[in-house]
Every structure is written in structure tokens, then in C-alpha cells.
Length: 283
Image (cartoon, rainbow, N blue to C red; front, side, top):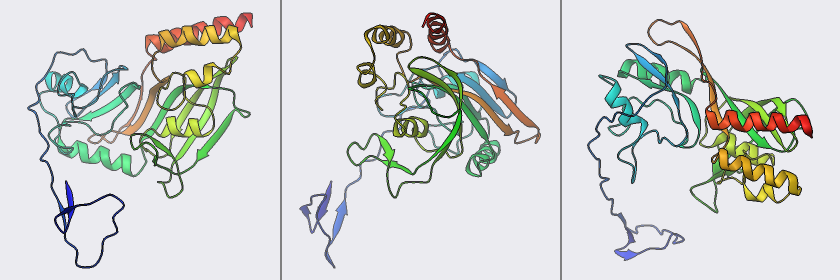
């Protein structure tokens, strides 16, 4: 797809003066989006925006290989109109959550509202709190992780703490301690892709169940046999990263009223916590 002086070029090729580089771009296929009657857990809705408690497993917007069955398809079915500031494949979408992260997500119904919300995100005036179940135990009850994040040079689909990455700040507070896991409340001060997952892994506290960032087998093998069995049991219940967008605080774009919304944990997360609390009584 890339040639230098009409010859195929390797990625390591050093460009010389007056050489001609040609790049052939494929125009991406943009499928027509249709509304689908997918149930939505609506936390708040008015004429201007809608906030849902997204279940784990639901992709936010269509992409390669996912033209249907997304949150966008559900929003198109439910809402009469949505903003188009974020492109034809992402109507209404102001921010994202990973497929297997559950919790609060805001969508805009017109472009004016969309731009106002986007401005709040870029100015970091929106407060975002998450609940995360992570491996290990923190020495302190509160702390912060201030470490730059960028794409991993080893795997371009993953992110990592890396010199020259984008500044990233995560604050956390311990809510409950268990024998080999800890429930923490996390506040994002920046909004990098996979930020919580990357920062917690950087501190050797990967999210429980996270298949991408070392939150499964590599941690189980460090446990004694009793806890190995317990961890394996919990992973059959919560077969994803244990991360939930719990709370959003923002200013309503039209009324300027403060909004403070919360989303309860989903059943799989709650069941795991219930078992951990019960096991703690007998530990």
C-alpha cells in the first residue's frame, strides 16, 4: 500500500530528499445503521441527552465486523434524533467504554449538546468514578498513579506506561480488602484508552479477570490451592475485567444544573463481591 519511487518500501526505510512516497488508501465501508430493539437501562433521559448503564459485552458503536448489536443501534431505535458530531457510525456518542466494562455512558441528542459535553470532557470538568476489583493489596488506603500512557511497541492493540506517552493521572481509594483482591474506587483525572487497566497493571494490581493486561492465569498461579479454586470459581461468574463506571458528575448543557448520576453494579460483579465477603468471614 506504500511505495517509494514506485517500489515497495519497508517500514524501516529511511526517506531521502526528492524521493516520492505514494500511499494507497482504501475508502472504509460505511454500513447503513439501523435501530435495533435492544433493552436499555436508562439512568437519565430528557430532550437533550440520555445516560445509560451499559452492560458488559455490549459494544458502544459499530466498527469492523460489528455493524449491528451495538449501543448505537439501540440508541437509534430508542431516540428520535441523535448528534452526528462524531461521525456517521457514532451518532450520539460523546465518550466510550470498553466492550467488557459496564456502567454509565452519556449520549447527546443534538450537536449543540454534544459540543458542550465534549468541552466538559476536554476541560476535565466532568468527574468520572469507577469501581474496580484488582489483584493484591495496596499498602495505603489512598493513592495516585501519575504515569504517561502510549501504545505498546510490542503489541499495537495494547497500551502501556511508556516514556513519551500522554500524561495520565489516576486516583484511587480502597473500599474493601479481601484475602487476595481489593475493591477500589477510581477517579480518572485524564481519559486515556484503557487508562485504569494500564495503570493498575503498572502497579502490579491488574484488574481481576482482565484477559489483556494480566488479570487472569498469571495471577492465579501465585495463590495457594484454596484461593486458586476460589479465584477460578469467581472467574466463571465474572468472565471479564472487573470494572464498572459507577458515577458521573457533570453540568447539564442546557439547564446548567449540576448532574450527579450513579449506576448500580451489575449482577456478575455483585455476586463476586458477595462470595468474597462470605469467604472473608471464614478466612
